[in-house]
Length: 487
Picture 1 (cartoon, one colour):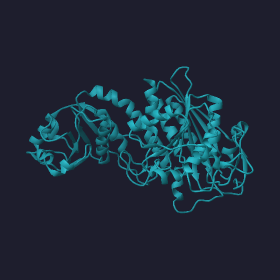
Picture 2 (cartoon, one colour):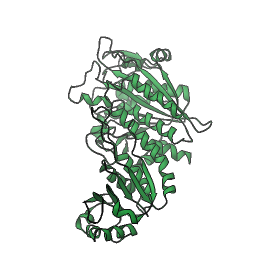
Picture 3 (cartoon, helix red, strand yellow):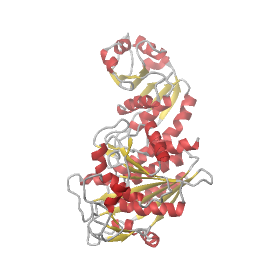
Picture 4 (cartoon, one colour):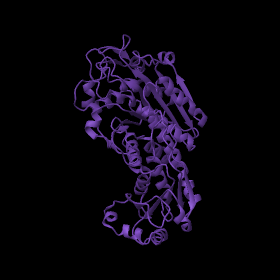
């Protein structure tokens, strides 16, 4: 897997600045502020002070930067000046780090962060942004140069940065999974990668098709009937919290979604390799919890299927029976993710009796129409639980916006021949109706959040903490929610 760049924390040594090669990064609030700023300005014969007094620096927002190439008086090939107040908040410190990470290259980088209160957050932002997926290229990408940070208290900063490094690795694991092509990441390979996390201390169990048939997961199995890749459910457990009921995380893992018999248009179908994004986030969170030895009980369940057209595939108009016992008329085989989640949600409640459930899925294109790529659609039956999650998402700068549920939306699921249908065929309120479908498979007294990540799992442009492509959205927010409960 892609590993986050390693960052070494060192004490400040201004005497060595003139001879440092590679890239130097100065974090500063402005002209003449701080011993490091003054030292660099002396070495560069005032060039740093002139840059800090320039209109270009004045126009920078906190966390943004300008570069001085081959600065006189320094051996470095570039000096990056990042605008950052020493007392900057978490979000701004991470933004500054991401600015540095976006410009990393093969040259070594020395970040001068002495006196910065949230130096560990700067390191976290740097690590998150310095990502690239190159496993499928014939020529391996050259690695990033070494990254060192000079800070006021290296041991204290390293201690704070440790748990954040675990989160970064979980985010990278999610991004790698979403980035993989479907001929590589089929249901076999996905399950094997999750099983390998037993080495980290997770309990991992793989349920095969015969197990799912015995359990009555017929809606999940129906989605995968047209594929040569067998459907699976993978259960990952982290037991670090004593006897408490676990939080359950449930992810949609459609390794490729052709739409089935209700075939998708050819244009853009290649992006359907990311339709397992919900399962990837669950996997990334579970990896993070194991790496940081979380003091919580969490169970992650992912339904892994492939939705393909063939002579064995389910047809529009078929009626299937869920594990819960409800019958579902399949009016559109491309509304398959909710069929997968229905059975896994019910199984999670029946077996694990969780304290709450969060499900994640690249479920609807409608949520992109509503919220674009800036926010995940959030649906919940529990205000307190939802507010807890939204607070965590805000802290992690992961966009999330709550959308409503209601009987009028649920009524659209009525079927003439079955208990419900899986799709209305209409364009209005598509993401809400899909959430109402899932709510039918959540017990009324079970706190539940549904996250529709169709717009945030993968983007066509760079985001604050990721290059274009897979973002890993959700790993940080869900881990923060879990960590906040640990105290």
